[in-house]
Length: 140
Length: 435
View (cartoon, helix red, strand yellow):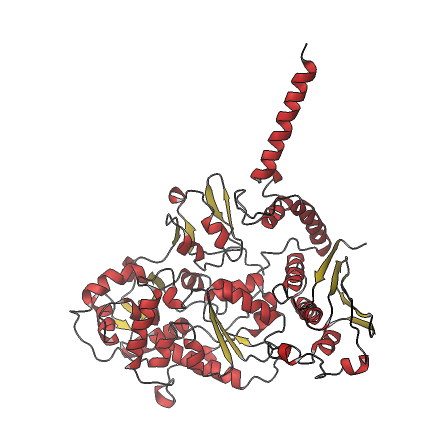
């Protein structure tokens, strides 16, 4: 049973609130006294994934859970889904439109960066349906 | 950690405090609570930034610095003027005159902190240039002691990136003592080094150093306390021609972006105002500024020129400093024979330690349980963050309740609800018992 569980809705193109979910997650983890290096890894992942939802998805949710020995981020969106997952996991590959790249996002580092920083990383996607990403971090 | 005694320059003068919530709302580390009709500072959390001093309408928040009378404790007294001092005087067209005025008010020698800044700039430039592993975050300036303390409390994971070079004040103090001991053949303990400060956090940096074992500064005097005397002396002081040594880059350190300019890193970012600095530190932490090489964060708007212990308006002072700087040569720290400090001396001696004052509990499981309880209490609070309960926000009140420092009925809305319930019960009782 998670002791802390919160679901954050994240909407497409909502740059006004983008980053608020990850800020809340970070604040909570700091209060809990999570180790610095681990906190940094979780921060990077939650921020990347939140911005991915804003930029690439049609909207979705971040389910944040903390148990005694792990932190979990389960992210689900309502589409559009990733056609070629293998390609999407490659560094530098991006489908972000020019308008988004102009804002400094969409460099194609997001998914590989998350995979590198999470202790467990799992991604499922179906074109036309949606994407689901599960990231787990072990607490010492 | 171990360090359980906390020195603070920022203090409350209780008799002046009205118990309003102005300071409460502006404290960046939520270190203030109001109860029993006055503010209280949580010393574990306070970073001496002075935000409360600047906001308090009743001047109840003060900075404790050393009085000028401390000069008499030493045979030879050296003034270390912060470059911020240069921007304080109307009509001052020559920095040399101000340095002369320092001698006139009782100092025996002057060493410009701006000169120390030139040595520090050079060291930082080397660190940025020789950086081998870029961990996706910029190197962070250690110059503003309030920002360093902010990082210790709120961003401990960034401490490894704080640059391991001592502050310009410490560099100047070290060089000054060496020079005076050599030139006047004085014993080190007979020399009193006094920093003229725009800010309370510098006093704390001297009394409770974090990156060196012991400060080389013997006393810290508020710019506000010497302003009047200096202003009177500037026009008439006898002229000495050997006091001024710093160039424009060293002097530039007084304002936001000055350090960045002096260090000469192109891909650097300078930010002032503690709330703005917090936002950027959040971005750094998120890995969102991974291409940045250097970050200069200053707690006060305008940099040190905006410090709580300055006399002049920040922007007026900034303009004056600009005009004074234009006349100065752009100097590098000297090399060879003239070099006063070694790279080893300019290096910090201790690692910056995290300050876990925001943590709920040392035990993660207990912390989790407390967090769960906080969420439950928070869900039932009005969410107005009015501060009337004495905690800075509804969430902070929920935390204070769980940590045992407050009760839910400190919330005036909760209290009102309770009173309504009780009065309704009273009415009900009297109704049912009426014969």
